Image (tube, rainbow, N blue to C red; front, side, top):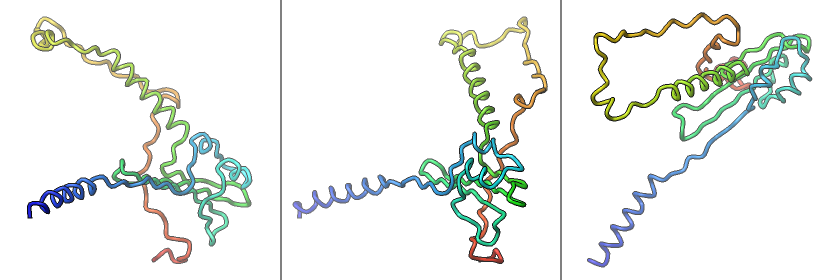
Length: 184
């Protein structure tokens, strides 16, 4: 009986440790669109120009030749919710009539992120960490020291200084092309 107890305990411990180490691979599907390409998309472009710029859509719409949907889906262990993005391009007379961007970043979004990052780095470098002695004994301001409030920032004047519109939340994907009514 004692001979079976140790291997059984080791086997049980090994199984318990192995179940916590499950690898979940990243899943990436659809068209990954680069921000530079999406920023260059303009109304009036031809189908061939859009195909050259963005590539062909992964899932062509069999019922509507005048609509191209570029879907992108990314699922990872690191994210709770999968990343869903969609760019829909509508054509009329083989030219771009309009397009809808749901979550695909543009160069303006990337420029704003770069400015925010520079600002955060500058603020962290500017704010020096107080030493132990000043944190412990010198942290309180006396009544004779004036308190300064931060000056309000001026309103942004140029388009580059304005923050971009927030990216809309991921919307559910439309029904598959095989259901004409859109209902499953």
